[in-house]
Image (cartoon, one colour):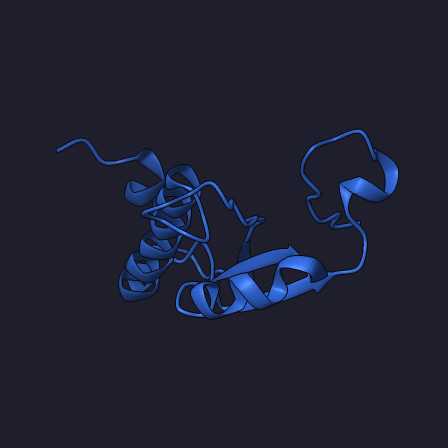
Length: 115
């Protein structure tokens, strides 16, 4: 199998670096099987979670980061619907006070603003 060059790099101390992956899921009421998320969101969430878990198990072989953290940023209106699902995958769930709806009210979906 082909392995990325990053894995073949010589092991060096990460010196306290953390890789933070921010995922911004949203409730999709039209989703049926994957409720409360849609298929694309489930795929991305499970993929990021699996990659994080694999890195944690193997990071002794390549010290690019000391840890990997999966953060799910959500809006307050969807916290109740999403928190129970996301808690199984995310290291942290952060409810952000601002969303795209605050600045762009014409958009159909309110996504959290990180900044």
